[in-house]
Amino acid sequence: MRLFAPLLLFACALTHTSASAETPASAPAFEVATIKPVDPAPKSGRWMRVEGTHRFVARNYTLRLLIAAAYDMNPRTISGGPGWIDSDKYAIDAITPGEKAPDHDAQMLMLRTLLTERFHLVFHRQAKILSIYEITVAKGGADMSETLTPDAPPELVSIVYPDRMIMPARNASMADLARIMQRAILDRPVVDHTGLTGRYNFNLEWQPDETQFSGDIPAPADSQSPPLLVAMQEQLGLQMKAVKGPVDTIVIDRADKPSEN
Image (cartoon, rainbow, N blue to C red; front, side, top):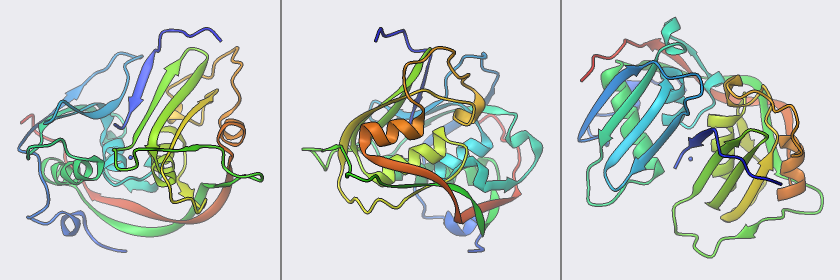
C-alpha cells in the first residue's frame, strides 16, 4: 500500500478525595513552566512529549484533555467545571528537574502539580457504571512479539495518514495500550482484562471513524485497512468489545483560567 505524508501526529511519548489531597507540597514539580492559550489551525496536531532531556511540551490541549492525560483517564470520565474546559486550548512549555529525562509516570505527576497550581484545579472522585471497552485475548491467543529490551521506556505513537492510522508500539504492556486507547484515541474508558504481563512490540494499522480522536479526524472515504476492533483481533490476537462496567471518574469542583506565567 502506498504511503502518504502523515497529516497529524498524536504522541504520548502512557473515592472522594480532592486534587489538593493528591498533589501534596512534596509532589514532583517542573522547575519552570509557562501555559499559554492558543488558537490552532484546523489541521494542527495535538501532542505531549519530552524533547531532549529536560523540555516538556504539550500542544493544543484543552483542560479536560490535560486532566485526562495527567490522571491516565478517558475524557468522558471527567465531568463538572466551566464550559471553557472543552473550548480553550493551551500550549505548555516546561523544564523538568534532575539529570535524566523523566519517565511517563514522573511527567504526569509533574503535570498534576502544574494543573493544581495554575488552574487552581480542585476535584473529587466518584465511581460510576459507564460504557467501556474491555480488552481480552482472542480465541487462538495473542499474536505479538515480546520485547528483548523490557527495561526500555514504552513507545506508542499514533500516526495519521489520509487513508488509515498506524500505531508502531515498542516495549508496550497491555496497560500501556489500554491507557493510550482510552486517553487519546477512543470515546470511552478502556480496561485491560488480558492477563498478559509482558512487554511487546507490534504494529497496529486500522481505519479510523468518528468515535475516535474526539471526532477530530474524518473517516477516510476509501481505506483498505480494517476497522479498529477487527484490526486488534486480526493483527494482535486481542479482542476489544463494548460492555458496561465500574469506572473511577473525576468531578471538577473548581477550575480557573491560568495567567500567562
